[in-house]
Image (cartoon, rainbow, N blue to C red; front, side, top):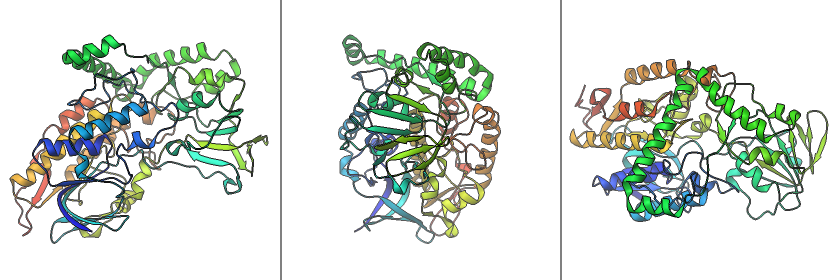
Length: 495
């Protein structure tokens, strides 16, 4: 099958659905959304492990134009967020535009016709004037290659591909990793398994989770007087925004938060030896800050053991740690997160002069303009692209800023009757120089840890350095002078 469209959107998470809604709201109907799976939802479809929930307050983790007064908890769980996305898609009648089971495997820029040629895994071809990639970074599970894993006869799976058909009851389970997913599912399975050995490489900072059920009267108030929910959302936003001071302005400010986390650890883990293993030796914020009220108590259970020695070898039915101790194991669950910075290595996107995007970024480092556009790759836009991730606030806020920016770029093309919009290389370089100058002063670089925020050279290619309102200001209006606009006759229409 071959189809020509004006705009091709990739992905049906918050980014892809948000972009599709923006296109419809502005009168654009000639677009298609490609989704690799058989249902929509992105991250919130894939991650269905026990205890999966958002670590951003529910009322902030939603589209600003589609508030949900019916959240049942202060921190919504996965089924509820997924349900929210499906309801939003149905309300705006997006399913007519979505092509499921359509995984994009290649995109090529046609320099003659000024269009993108996109191919899916099933062999379908699309020709599009513009491509908007809403694939995000949390979609390729990071599964470490454990020595001897090929000999293991038990069950293995990643938290993002939870094996719901596998009964953990009475099993001896090894959990590898202590990141955001693991601290959510470990407490949920600790009472079911016979034994649980948690292999920790680096302990996370864990803050108390201010979670509770939202009262019926609160939900009714938000539903009948919408302005109250809007005011509450704004309050939560600015409270979260204030924490950027410690992340990007002065890491020493994190000392107060660290004291809260230390008290949390001390109050929940009376065992001094265990507590020492769980205390991080780096500045809070250097790695992702986690929130939980039941993670530490789960580690206190008699059936749970924390192992900080590391894995030396996997055998047919066991794991040998670095001290030589053998642990009998029926199943191995990876709570090891995702390929984030290196997720772009999997892209097969070819722009001007045949340059490959993954190859370019691997050779020269990942650089974009505002995390949205890349010089040499016209009419290609990223949502939640490089250096637009957050450690303190809602990424949905960032996504909405980017969606509006992309829509303005598309309008700029139409207004000038142009066929190509390409960010100027010098503009992109200047932006990245300023960006990295700020990032080197932040806790992610100076905090004394290694994290998935950084690439192999230790450069932060993931996080936005500071306040999200500054990003909103930066992307509020597209500056035409930042881009080269070209007609198909190669006539430059703006300088």
